[in-house]
Length: 500
Image 1 (cartoon, one colour):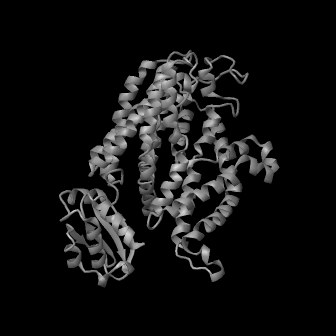
Image 2: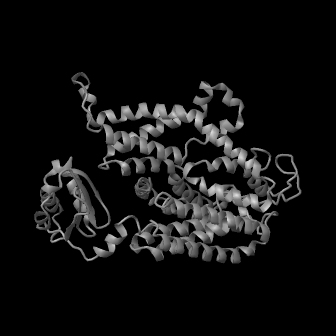
Image 3: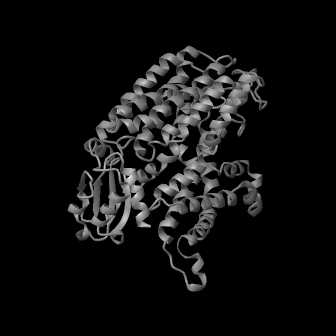
């Protein structure tokens, strides 16, 4: 199971890599033109506003459609040969499921749902990353299973890869029927949990923050967010904060604000602004392939600090090492409790980054804003120490330490090809493997080709080495690793063409 999650985590690296720059663009745009995000009193016209608007929209193009990236990334990453047909299959599954489970379709099939605001909200939030990952998995699974399917002559046109999308559609209908009954039940249960947390003061804020982060992979955090931040049950922490109210006022719902306004947002600031940076530093420090780690987590940490967009960081390791992600969520809960009792109050329109902190500090409900400095330092240190200890003590798979790849990068760092004729090298290696008929699967890490063969006795290591590669490893009878060096991707691409 863990191996499958790690494979999923690796598949997510491609779409995740596109997110940090988008978050940074949105953060800069928000800093220049907070009025775009609805900050009260901010300018809504002028040159700076237009520049900020452009940056926010550029970044939002991918951040707001992150689920689409994940559909394609998962479908391609989990397919046997990373062929475009798998991406198409994943997209077919996504479009079909999100359409069949949209509020309009669901309330037509089951009119009673329209009278239940919680269930209606559940289907309003159906276009989330969790459904995207399911769609990607369905697309990749159908592709792997049916890409070589042979149909009767009168259906021969739909044989092979042409039938993948058809099968994917049928499977997606079945999954949609299951989710039609399961999704609202889970969503409603989480709303009930949120209602139960209210009244627990700081402990409740901590439980909420923990569950908020823990549910990010499933998209079900929206259920809790709507309980605490918006007017789902008459609370509306976010709405009342930005409307300029204070604790004790009659809020937007017409009810007295009887809780410490901002308590369900404040705890995120030290974690997102500083805690993520501490965790990122720990990952870099513990990484064996530091370049890979720096490339992903450093930009993600900057993104989190500026505008509070943490998904590039979180999706970078949550599936590679879910136990560590649970610890990460727990740290949010702990700091939310601490934040409540030290009296730090801040709010956000977008997310808990530096930009929102600055603008929210001028609102009446803001309190002890400068406490972000000691809280931030504490969060940075605690996140760093906890992450570094956990990663090194339990040999956890975080960016730069995935499976054997980090070790390979260190061992193979001086590996070089005898020449740069990648086509000739790939052809020679393939011949040494016993021909394309003997190759079961092809993959590559940072420096090596990783292959599974049908018959290990047909592999000729001397012939493979004669191709100009740096070496050959045989982890098992049918597993072959060919040490190429940092240009492995070029050889892998050429070999993939030959295997088609």
